[in-house]
Length: 303
Image (cartoon, rainbow, N blue to C red; front, side):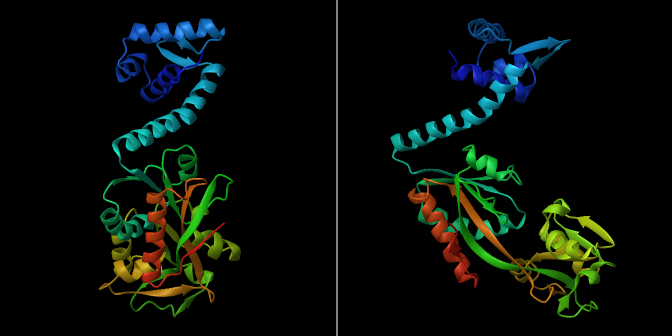
């Protein structure tokens, strides 16, 4: 019989790297943990791990069970939290994951009014799921995903919360006019967030189609430093127009459109299908769209 304890043992062994540490995490003795797994192996006629020197290496069966544990255990833990919330009369915990750097600034617009409107809901922010949020959402590790690049899958519904334009931030006095073409960036230092170029729209939608590259590509962690560097003449940067208006206020920088048509972009909220009607989830989505509309940005649903 396969039970939860065996899966938990494999997950903690993978996380912590030793039987001793896994046993301590699970409040077991090392001998009890080893006995449980030997009994499991005998019952099913498979070997789960083997020793290689002082280390343990999972067999093919062990790797399969570990993958199962990583899928199933988060869902069971989520279900237990939900049932506990129901038992205590609470609405639950809304766990939000993000897949972009500007998402945090936007989320802060929504957080305060949401917490005021839903005092019985806890809000948990998960930044560790950057660029892997779809798996976290489907695996019940988060409840709502903020992403500018929605991956359409049958189990996920997206709602478009913000429409904006990516613009080029340049220092005042820069030679560029109101509109930049791809070749205009060939001699520039392009400052972006630390994201692979193949995930950046300025490369995939603007530069690459014209076979252009900047003279130098520099990655910076924070919006504040990015705009300070631009203001100091150290380079140019691509940033959402609303962020440039807010974060760049008072700095000697200005916006330049990327191409005649501009680079339009949207921020989406992803949630698991079937959970759209959970009141505290729907409340977050409605509030996010309302705040987006107040900021002069359009918001609409996506099937």
